[in-house]
Length: 335
Image (cartoon, rainbow, N blue to C red; front, side, top):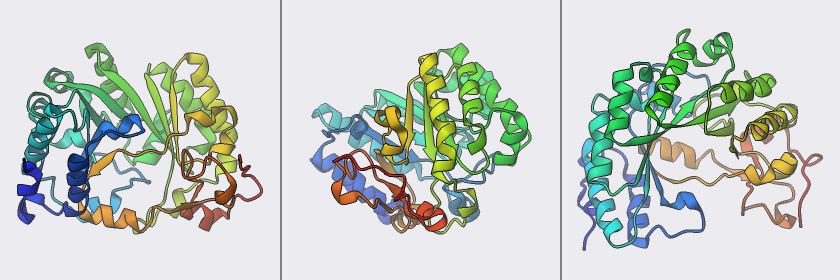
C-alpha cells in the first residue's frame, strides 16, 4: 500500500523535502534498529520563540521568519505512522519541537491527533516551559496526551539565565511551568546546553536540576553549526570537563539518570557509558537540514584505532577543533 507521505506534493511539503524523503525511507524500511531511539520521530513545528538563547541552533531560521510547519504534513505523517504501526513497523514515540512548540495555538489538538490517529504511544514536547506557567494550558497538553516534557534549563539562577536567554522573565516562568508539570503528573526531562556562559557553573546547574525534580538530565556540548556565527558560545572541552564530571557525580548521588551528547567518550572516565550521540529521525525545514549537512562533521586523531569511534563516540566537532585545536594530547584511544 502506498504511504500517505508519497501523496504530498511540493506545496504541502512546505519546504521539508530533504528530511521528508528520509522519513519516507524510514517508513518503507521499517524502524527496527540497534538503538532505542530508532523508534522516535522528531517534528519541528515552528520558527518562533519567546526567548532568544545565544546558542539557539535554529537562530538563522528564526531570523528568516520561516513559516510554521504545514499541518497537512503532520496529518500525512500521522496517517502513515498509524498504518505502519498496524503492520508492526513505524515510530512509537513522537517529539514535537520548535523553536518553541508551545507558541503553536493548535498544539493540544495536534498532540491529541498524534495519540488518537497517529499510532504514537508517547508524545514528548521540547519546550522552554515558559507558557506552561499557565496551569490550564499545561493541563490541556497533558490531557491531550503529552506525557513527557523536555525542558530547557541552562542556568542555576535568574541572572545567568537572563544573560543566556536574553529574557529577564524566562527563569521564573520556566520554574512555574515545571511546577505545574509535576503537579499534573508529567515526566520532566532537562535539556542543558554547555556553552561558554555556563561552563563554570555546571555543578550548580546539577544542584538546580535536583531541586527541580527532573527525572532525566541531558547535557549537550554546544556545537557551532555553519551559518549561525556562534563560535563565541563554544566551550573548551577540557576546561569544562571537571565541572561536568562533578555535575554527573551529583546527579548519580541523587539517583537521576544523565545523558551526555557530543563529548569525546574517553574524556568522561567512568561516566563514558552516559554518552549517547544517537539522533532520532527528524522532519524539519530544508534550510536547516542543508545547513546541518555542511556543519556537522566530527573527527578524532585516534579514529582508526579506537573501538568507540563511529560506534558510540564521534570524537570532536570540527568547530571546537577549529577554535581550540584538536585534543590529541587529551584523547585516549581504546583499542
